[in-house]
Image (tube, rainbow, N blue to C red; front, side, top):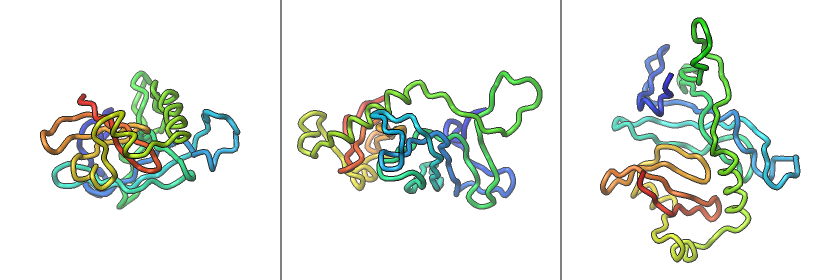
Length: 188
């Protein structure tokens, strides 16, 4: 079953809502301030929650996620609920399970997760100034400039999938948490 993000269609079968939803990442990175494992590359997980609104043109406005601590990173949603009636509208299901498919949540497999987490640790340990990022990657955007120039489709820290508004080219940007800058646009 495709996720609403992949199908580009959000709708609650219970109440008919097509605008307000809550995404959950049950495998989120808790951030160095919340984790007590003491490892350089943490593999601990927390549930992160993110409200978002689907606009009439199918673009999505994401709110800040909740859960974890400073430096928390959201990966991809493991389930999505309707923000109006709280009904579960999507959770990945094993395609090879016999019998009827249930709405059980299961962990999504992301082969890039360990590499992305290592990149996040490195980026956070050595944050760069805008000038340094511009010298290394060319154009750099802060959060307001990102909103002006791109539609955000989704985050998988330290990357964000976007559509460039000027020519509708889909691609990715890399970002650092603090100070928050987006850079290294690569067309898909």
